[in-house]
Image (tube, rainbow, N blue to C red):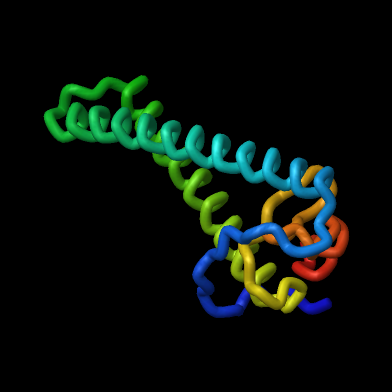
Length: 137
């Protein structure tokens, strides 16, 4: 299976339960989807907090009120924000690649699970090893 990162942007589809998906698979998928949403909310809150702190330090620096510790913290916050944005971009590329792979013909969003990714409808699954091998990572 070829999963290319050059695929176009697709609108995420959150999925409805596909026919034939067992109750156990569906329950786990919903739990994983909810865990992913909680994680994204926590990451968004952390990013917002870092951005606010960064803004305060930038303002102090602009007023020449920043000391060496402030300047180091400013560099650290900038690096952390850059890292978080890089992770967000990687996840967006992964979702585009998974949707573009053709593994789910409906084009549903893919939900990370313990051992791979499952489409939001529940019918299609790609193991973590398959995804890693296809992406060359």
